[in-house]
Length: 124
Image 1 (cartoon, one colour):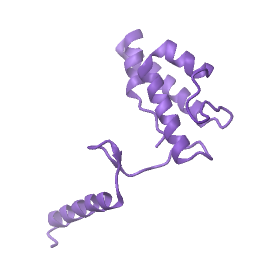
Image 2 (spheres, one colour):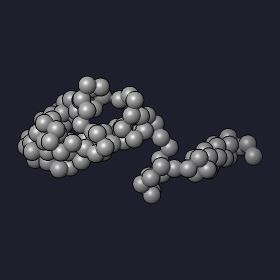
Image 3 (cartoon, one colour):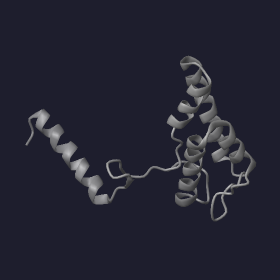
Image 4 (cartoon, one colour):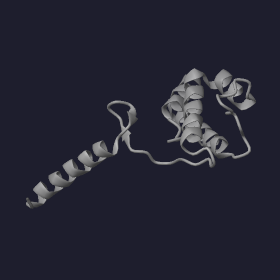
């Protein structure tokens, strides 16, 4: 939770630069925003995202709504799951349904993989 989606950054850079340069610029911009997100002195969230935050406003104006949404989503996730610190935490995720996975769902997947590995080795 709290990790930036790099695709919107890449898409925004492809609109401004060639494919080769877009990759490099997207990586640089994404890294810069990862640093901003982890900066404990930057507080763009109170109860909600501050619409008048200068960094976020500039991001939206210069790179578009998709990049802005990726950054604000990461900020909201960090604020929700780890409000006392600014670092990414892992969470079990159900990608098919776009939500947090339950412990039972995680165990079901692990057991399925374990059984598959045992069959490959010839162990029943």
